[in-house]
Image (cartoon, rainbow, N blue to C red; front, side, top):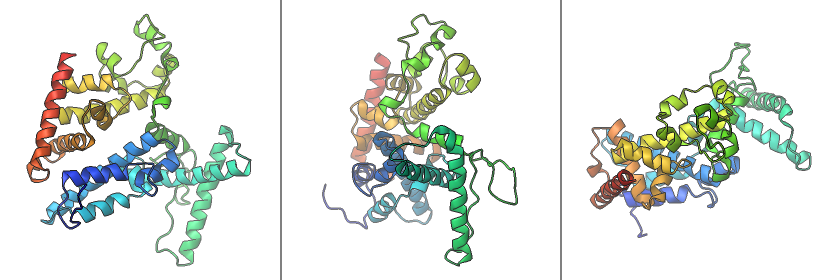
Length: 346
């Protein structure tokens, strides 16, 4: 790409380049690379980075507008490159206290694995490992506070069962949860093709639903739509009901959450609910960005479609024509019309 003036307003072309670079888990030092060290899932790490960077730049754009200023190329690069793990996870809905406790737990578990010649601690030991890691982190933070190295005392983190470590709230359960909440949060992020779900997860549910072919039925968004089950209805199924039907609750909720997020973004981007449903059904294991690219939309145009769609909902007074180059808006409009026609013809 051509050299950009760092003090010029951010353009869609440069935005696409920033996102492509900073969401590449193979480039050392990028947000996606840092995330992948924790998740060990390049696809999930890339998606998490794209989401966090898009949210951060959109928020910064709003702040600049309130000051009567513009988001420059220099500022956009600075925000994207310096995206920390905590900010990424927070943008994905993982509370800061849970993150800090979870990351301390993962570090201690990794250290124990190394000390045991690569043998991971059994699941039965994880609650104690979590509690030890949390108390060690708080103790270290308190020591730094007493020594004047930091201005504030450490945050009271959750124990494995979600109870606070604060001496002033003994027995109080924190809303962020503990070990189970951390595992569920990571499970929602790790959704590469080989870790989504298998037909075995759904072997018995077909008979519960009255379907005859239990071995080949893929109980994804397309199956839900075919049987008149909305994503909202699917989200309301509790774990006990799912387990009685032979469904893995964690996999089910991961599928429903991912499909709901993808449908929302596509519905806003295309302005056609039916088309959005069919596209999600066609690509059940993908988010909106990957669905669009799988349908042969280039990443820059796909990012524009999603961003403009979100603006329509959250910032109706924002005029995309003042923020994005006309030719890219035209391309986004053409792609939306093309995908709507294709989906309607299926």
